[in-house]
Image (cartoon, rainbow, N blue to C red):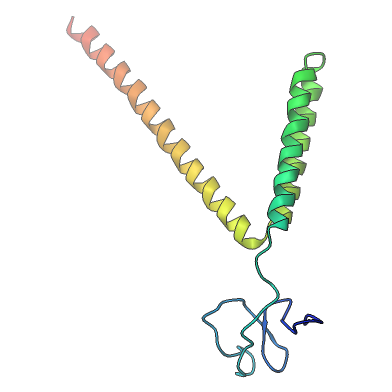
Length: 141
């Protein structure tokens, strides 16, 4: 629960009775017993999960690229392997990320999905506008 060297809470901020509380710096008292919380916490930011997730992602795309290059002989099998490796690699990279990284990627994915939706709607409007104008000219002439 606590670090052997600095006595910081490893799971979050601890009170004097060792109740685990969130890492929110605005909290000053324990949510269970009301005792003051410690100022330090050992559950801080680390680059290691992001590096591991990035390494998994890079290795996954390297293997998928090799499968695509070699996949001329059996494209169906290469496609299935690429989909399987992509799914497994994405799942593993997602599980390694801390919750803050997962939220950031979820927001990024939602933003990309929104942008793609807007682009698709604009393309449909442009093409539907062209069809209407062609049919109007045909009816008049």
